[in-house]
Image 1 (cartoon, helix red, strand yellow):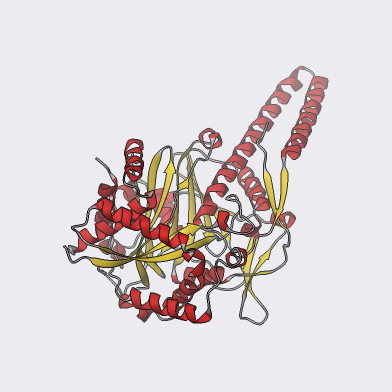
Image 2: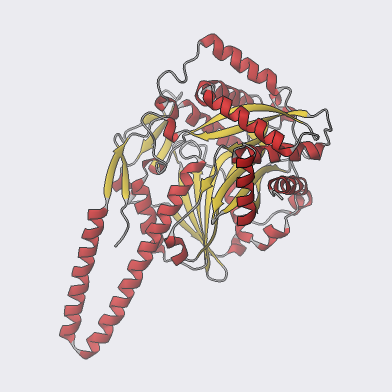
Length: 508
């Protein structure tokens, strides 16, 4: 019997104006930051029918994935126009690309500046994900906020790639989408296999006796109908609102006098002038987002978690500290140290009114900008505790809501006037990372479908940080997707930085 499926329907599927944060992401994605990817690698192939059916069912459950972004008639504001679930079933966004050899290759000029690592050379599916991460969404309105591609790879494997526009889906949206799609796909594969078995049985029985065949087919159809009815009984329909983040902030938690907004925005701007960054390599060449993967073993992950408890640090604090210390070591800042800016992304779903469930797709992250002074002589755990303390103080002061408008305004200014950023690089901070890890348990269906690997990452070569860190816990392991802008930074430099980060996180 299939598991219960919750079908989410937006109460009002008419046009809904985008909030300030969602609108900002339209500009950010156009610069090159904010295309979120979910890649699922399977050691098998799938029929087009099973893929399209699964995608239709997925779209029916998530109104935001069925949305287009368009402009109001006055041309000033943006709208989500959301198709009904019935309409979404008519036109699934699925395209298949035959072989990995048909994918675009790195050009020679880029390879001189950004050599592929040995791992990237071995795992060409990561190169496909990089290509998808650097494929922009259309600028012409309206455009769909979500698409899916299926690559048929050598050795009978498949790569399913989901692309999300950050105005419509944050990183936290990828986990429920991944698990639901894998479950739906497994169900479709099972149905196809059952139909094939029934056809084979019917053919065999037809040779014996025609009446037996008719009886068997009738029973099979009746049984299939009963199974569908059982699944319908298990299906739960949930009508919800999908408000903009700003509309769901609890009353009073984001209120700030107009003069205070001005002072804080100016303050952030002045403080950011003190921020230090990684040295740039090529500031005038076209940029792309590049990916470096890394992970800790289950034992190393457990050791790190235990050390965090012992030292009164959050996991987030330890990862941020590792990034800051690695940068300080790379730049050899000594005792003097430097001020570094970090952008922390907080999943606010359970802090909003009404609460937004983790299974609801949308953009519900708020950013907090922090400045932390770090020297080479400070111990790693001193910096980790400092990062944790600053984070806790910011949460207690509701900075994630209070400063939302100020940071949105600074983001807009950075995109409009790149020269306000160092060397026109659009770098706004040294690091960006989420406050909590994502837990990537895709359930037993993943094993049945021979899912061999998967990852999540977001483009970062437009407005953003020098290094974006996305971290996940899967199979008791801490896994990372590090994203940087190339050739603003070369791969050897960023690989050295990542290696240093991992050395700090490997507790002995």
